[in-house]
Each structure stands twice: as structure tokens, then as C-alpha cells.
Picture 1 (cartoon, rainbow, N blue to C red):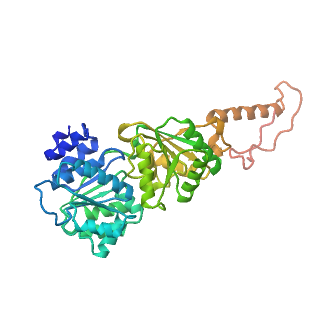
Picture 2 (picture 1 turned 180 degrees about the vertical axis):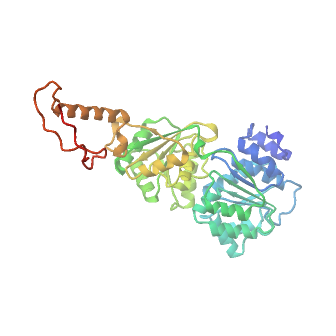
Picture 3 (picture 1 turned 90 degrees about the vertical axis):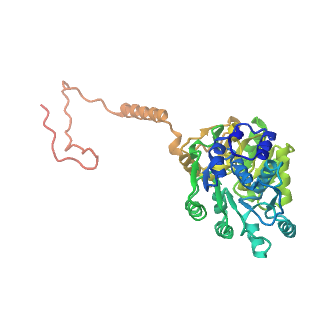
Length: 441
């Protein structure tokens, strides 16, 4: 029960109102030390409840008597607009019985309107690095009195090229007393550098191994001959699989638009989401998917992080993601919080090596699947097609053919004479041995 945590009664009231009963493993591990004021470095799988694991301790820190707001007290940094908007909703839900106010700063919104919001000085500021830097440069943002800094999906922010922005923003929070860093993956050297620079004597909590992610999600691959074949497979899957909502991931915006057009032409009700879409269209696409106005979303990796949609139980990788971490985040949209889901990756000849490397990274082997009505000619690399049994049959056939063409050896009693070979063949078959055969008597 959440009552075991040393949280303010108004926060516990909100938790009860939202029907949160049993804390998840990441909440059990992270909330107590965060409430005590420790810096944390937390790795926890997507959909495990890590947003509440940092929001509740953060709000608990801010609790107190209502007073005029004269400074931003908490800064939460996130990689995408969608994740920032979702986090704002979570903060507002948990703070519904308090006087705490939150604000959102992301790209795609009116800069002057955001400036007016900043002048009201929210207690909690949630934002993406790029637009926050713009406000710093314009003199409309002051972070010097921030008490608590939270970085969610820091590895993704580094992947998106925000390393310098993160360093600038964290350095602006010169008086911070606590820093929390949450992510679904362990990241690389860049993330370790950030951890070393921004965290002070952190407690490291790792609540999952990469290979154990999404235990409730079946992971399958279907081989395809080309892009057109993949498009037919997508249409078949959407028509024949049982699902409530689905996301189809592509690696490029051009491919997302192309596939979206194909689906609309086939009378599939869908929306498309990628970085070229303006904020209004991006919000509309996600709202329609959440509300059930559409069951299918075609998206780039902009939707691989932070998109939490009830009933999302099918993910299709039209293009194989370029890394194991991105694969984890994509399939993490389904099978969330112990639910069940299905993740299907469509594999052409140029996807196979990438798919194999992701299998090795996850220490898993994806289930191979064939759709009889759309079975293509490509079934994987040639040297993998023959199973051990098939190879054995081939060897037997070869031996039989060799025996059929070989002349029978004369018996010892046979009067016939045969010419002796001049020497024996060495074991490596490359040169005759000099030793002669003994004479036959």
C-alpha cells in the first residue's frame, strides 16, 4: 500500500482517488530514498510506473502552506513533447488536492504565451531541452533557484543530440539539492558522463535486465521480399489480428506518410505521427488513439517514448529499429504494467543482420512466423534455411549416389589383377605419400 511511504496525506488522498493500490517494484525501490533526499540513478522498464516513482517524492518535497510563488522549484526534462505532456497530466493528477502549480514548455507552442506563463512562476516546470534553451537565451527563464532536477529518458535526449543543452540546463540549476535520473535503458558512455556530472553520490537502482523486458509481450518476425510485400503484410495483420489499438513504426517520415496513404486507400482508419507534423496534428493523433476514435497509428520513433495508451496491444515494426534500446522502447508501448501484447517485426534481406544483432543484445530469439497467404520467397539467409535434419538427408543422398557409381571391389579370391596405385593420398588430400603399397600375394 502507498500508505507505507512517508507521503503527505493530500498526496495519499490523490493516490486513493486515482485507484492506485499496490506500488510497482520501481515505486517500492525509488520512493523511500527519493523522499529522504537521495540522488537516484534508476533503470526501470517502460510501463513499470516510473513516472509516479519520481512525481510523488517531488510533490512531497513541495508540500507546505500556500505562499506566493516567486521561483521555479522543480525542473523536469524530457526528450519529446508527447512525453512532456503526459508527465504534466500525471503531475496535475497527483497534485489535485494541493496548491502546487505546474507549467509546460515545449516546441510547437506560442513563445510569447509560454513567456507569460513563466512570469506567473510555476512551482514545477516540465519541458524539452530545445525550447527551454530558447527561453534561457531570451531571458524569460530563471533556473537558479531550482531545488530539484529530474531527467527522464536521459539516454534518449542524448541520442537526439541534446548533450550540450542538458549540460547548460543542469549548470543553470546551481542551487539544486537533489537530482533524479530515470531511464528504461542503461545507455552508453554519454549517459555515464551525464550521471557523473549531475548526480552527487547517487543510489543506483536497476530493476530490470534488458533481456527480461516486456515479459507479457510475444515477439515475432515475418520475412518479406520488399517494401510492397511489407505493406501487404501490414494490411493483412490489421485485418486478421485481434487487437484493440495498434502502432506501426517506420524509420523515416517519408515511409510513415507512404504507409499511411496506403492504409487510408485500403479504407483503414488511421493517423500518422512524426516530427514534421505540427503540434496540433500530433496532439490530435494521440488524442484520437487514446479516445478510440482510431485504432491504428503510423509513427516514427517520436512515439517510441512516453506514449502511454490504454488498450494498445499490437506493435508492428515496419522497419527494424536501428538499435536494441529503440526496439525495447517501441515494443514497450504494448504489454505495459504486466499486460499482454504482440510485437511483430517485418524483415527483408537488408533487415536480417540488424534483427540478429538485436536478438543477441536482448539475449532472446524471436518467434518465426509465416503467413501462408502472403508467404514470400525470402525466408532468411541461405545458410540458415537448411535445418540439421535436411542436411542429414542431403548427406545420405550424396552417399547413395556415390555408392551407385562406384565399381565393386574384387574379392581376395578373385583371380583378376588390378594395377596398384603409385602412392597413398595424405589425410589433407593435397599430396601423395611416398610410401608404396605392399605387394599383393
